[in-house]
Image 1 (cartoon, rainbow, N blue to C red):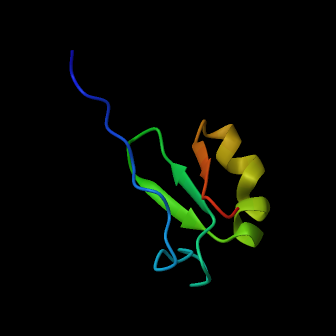
Image 2: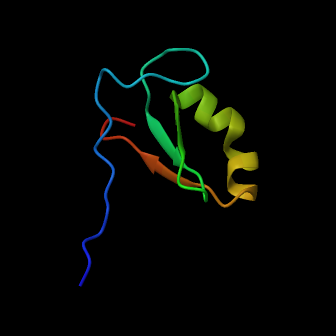
Length: 62
């Protein structure tokens, strides 16, 4: 049985792709790519990301 690929937990060095603040959410795109967002930008883009069937993964402290 093949192993499951998992993404590492977000750390303090992970930064929001929009503003550079600490990343709290990883958005995994259907294509396999990912975007990192702070809490503010995750909420601001949440509706569109859900529309695109993006897998939203909250970090430990989110």
